[in-house]
Amino acid sequence: MTGAAIIDDLRARGLIHDTTDEASLRARLDEGPVTLYHGIDPSASSLHLGNLVGILVLRRFQDHGHRPIGLVGGSTGMVGDPGGRSEERNLLDAEALAHNVAGIQGQVERLLRVGGDISVQLVNNFDWTKDVSVLDFLRDVGKHATVNQMVAKDSVRSRMESEHGISYTEFSYMLLQAFDYWWLKCNMDCDMQIGGSDQWGNITAGIDLIRRREGDHVHGLCWPLITKADGTKFGKSAGGALWLDPERTLPYEFHQYFLRTDDRDVERFLLQLTLKPVEEVQEIMGAHRAEPEKRVAQAALADAVTELIHGPDEVRKATLAAGALFGGGDLDADGLEALRGIVPETSVAASVSVGDEAVVDLLVATGVCKSKGDARRTIDQGGIRVNGDRIGSSDAGFAFVDGRFALVQRGKKQRHLAVVEA
Image (cartoon, rainbow, N blue to C red):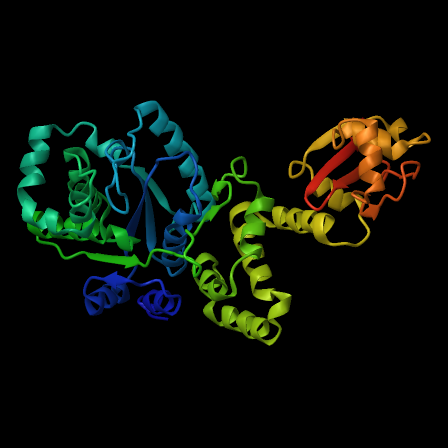
């Protein structure tokens, strides 16, 4: 396998939007391992799905024997990148940035291999910019870039033409990112920067700075921004962004998001958001096209991405929870246990299952119904299920599954888990 095999793999996955001279890049990759970096915006304490492609491109290079650097923008995060935005974002203070950087670094370490000869290196550009004076920056960086070049970049020009304009702070972002590439080249022998297509102007600014200051030839590669076929934004749900932090987006919700993937998107997402070989993706899609109603591609996608981010145990729990909610079969303790944290939960006494109107008592105890009268009316209307069974009358009995759980359902959407007090 040649060093440039990674380029062929990325192209097969639809992950190349633009590169510097590809023949030169392939020749450099064939010479031996290259050190490359990808910058991550620390605007939140967690990565979200939109960040996943970039981290996985770093991982793909690492798997091909190249040396990845994950750069968390502690200093550039104080300035803000104008790319892809219509107005200037709020700037974070040092304390908030430090908190965000710490959260992101932990997630990057879980997705990229740490240790060994090709361990990921995590850096923070605040470390090498905090002591640079304004005069030094203007002399060593600013003089090598013309305003004409900067204004010609799409990210800057579109902001200048918008009603909000662009501040000098954000206008300077390009120079700061170029300075990062120069510093990494000089101090860590970094020969390549990667990013989304909205970063191409910033990437080429760094390449130009290195050429002007050092006379060295370095490389850049970007991938297309990920979009969905129906026009909605990738990585967004009704509740907002899909986060990699399980405290911000439950692994179950994460898994469900990919199970709902449109048939028009599923092959592309399998190629770009998982580490499955291209040949395996083709086999999955062959099975999917033969029986699309089974949605085997969506299941493979949901399992693969959730396992990558949260581990196999969370995939198992998400599958069990979905079976308990939507499976329609007999419920068991494992499935109901998996629902904890996903549906509302109330502790109840075991004695609630004993009595002439045990179900009525259960509905009131869990708050599913406001009163016994409300419970009786809802039961008479056929609107209550307990552990999947429709309750026909207010004097019907029920039993806790495994002596511990009862799943109460009112209507089609409202579900509540009753858990017997220890």
